[in-house]
Image (cartoon, rainbow over all chains, first blue to last red; front, side, top):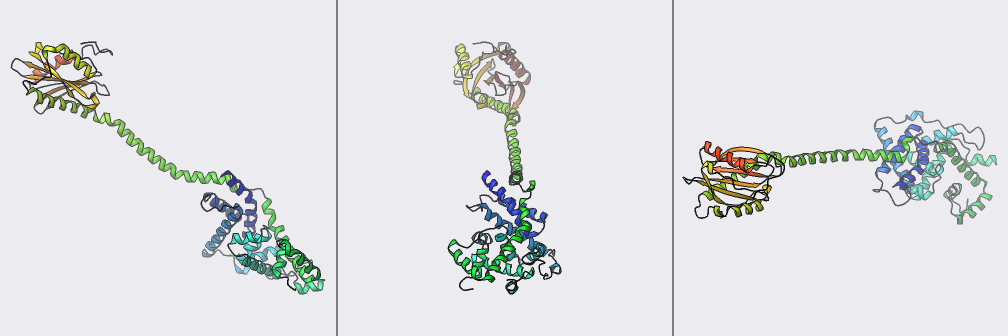
Length: 168
Length: 267
């Protein structure tokens, strides 16, 4: 049990980081992580898979996040679509991605793409583990990743292939 | 783009391409600047995301996110209903226990009443007997006294009621209340007009408390008392004044020397 709590503790920084990226709010993120840990602790031994706890924790966190979003949709607290960023102007320096633009771009991604993208890029998880967390086949994961990255490229105005050709 | 897929490029950019495919992709990138730029873009995206959100993972973790603390809190929350349940169980237990231990108090009166009833019943049964009124006759009064004393595990002398006009007929051993040693001795006395009184003696009740009680029971008068050594019920159908005189004599003789803690040796 103690080693279980140790394993949880080791995962907390990653969970916070991931939740922060998902919610874009430090408080909401920590609330989410706290809920996630509480759920994990109260369910230990019941639903806990035999493997490492990280994937299991991320699955719990994602479910909680989706539920929270659904609840806020019902309450009408959804983010106003007017605040979604305009397609951005090109990056000031070639090859440099403006972070603020990137953040806004990520916010506009469909949730399923955002979840997948952040698992693989931010957390550096293997495709197989990310697919396992999201309970989807790896092919589905890669297709979500591909669509997410294409959307980011468009939204951040990062030069696409035609432009790249001229750069070269 | 030949045989290299976008997924392979992405996997390469994410560092997740199987070792076996890596060389082929690298060769492809070497000759396809567009593909190389694509890979570079994917990597920049990843870098940007990590730059933005990575630091959150390095912040010091607030106390409310410490698993040990959360676990302790959850345990507390979980134990609370159990505590209530446990408290309920304890209270019920206390109630039952109190009831159980209060039983002797509640039954103190019934205990004496039972003894009186037994004494009166024994009286009614044996005073009617002529040839078998007693088990051991007065002629063997010394043996009677020793025998009954041994059986009752106390010293039992034969009261002398000649002043009241009664002489000993004899005595017998009877089954008695478990609380009072399980045995009882009955002594029978008779006066000149063949009126009989019986004295019903048992070992002390568990509480050993002194008690006195007069009772009329099924046409008989009973004078009951108890002390730390014995219980005694004098039963007869005499007029009340006469019964009291007899009972007084029995009482004074059977409790003689009982004032001190040590029972007198009589035999």
